[in-house]
Length: 391
Image (tube, rainbow, N blue to C red; front, side):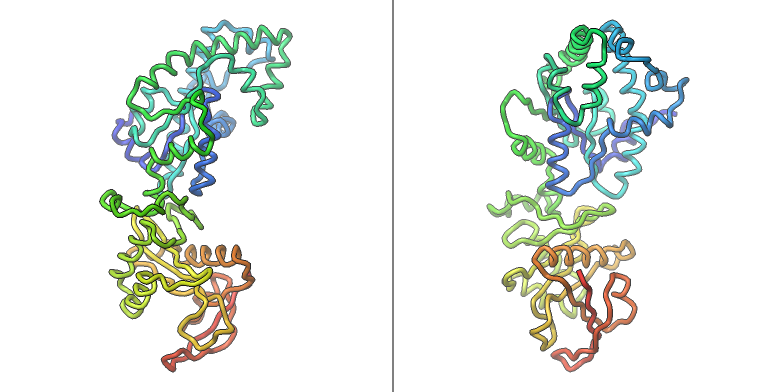
């Protein structure tokens, strides 16, 4: 069965690929991006045993070739070794693409991988791939010195003639990557070279800018870029990422805050819309008080808050999880629960041991771990139920 390239690209639209040469910094940059933005990482090397178990020797011969020891593995000619590496990567790519289609259906995925320029052109757009490069000379020593490659280090050192095995491996990697290194640099693709001496943080920031992660995570659009303040460079404060939805803490004077105000002003919760819009417009929040936005399908579709006071004359009770709202068309995806989870995570970070929720309903917030405390009277004279959750 053959799939056209445009179909593959469509199904991989939520995947961002970090590829390149050995020791170019793929894994380091991918992990830095994952930590900063809360994005799951798919590492094809970690998945190889799983894919090998599903493979078939007749269909994936390179993946299933067995070697008795390091002498046999490194005893091949450079051309034999190189051909096996290329075929092995090609065979695994089918498993990788199917995994990514499944895993990225409702969420963004970072893929730490090996891609040729031809493969990149077939499966993704240039804006979704970055190449991390290092001139492919004497790679074995650097590769072996990494803690996460201890298995490879032990294996190559088990060869009867380690220096010969090392020379074969270095020559193979040079033969495999020398032209690739130059071709990537001459291509239209985004690339970074470790020889330029940037820090991990700098490389991650440049890659994030190429991918557009700041704008993507904050839910801003192309047309809003001219409205961005100097605070746009502040790293996004992702609280919860799940099922393709991103819950973010809204910070003052950011593009997200501007988008959030527009969302509130136009939301369908007419009873409190003007009140919440006024709070955000004038930023009437003190200390740790804040709002949270849920971003899905590239736009804000819901909100929640953590406040010191609510619509009740109970100054001794706080913090309140309040203003929980999701637009009608996005209900049924457990987004209210994710918003409450985000508020509670933030409250715990602020040192609180419990949070409160007022409601007129019975049986709603119990499913989020809250327990009924007592009935309370709001400023309008109505009676509501007070719930508490231990953090």
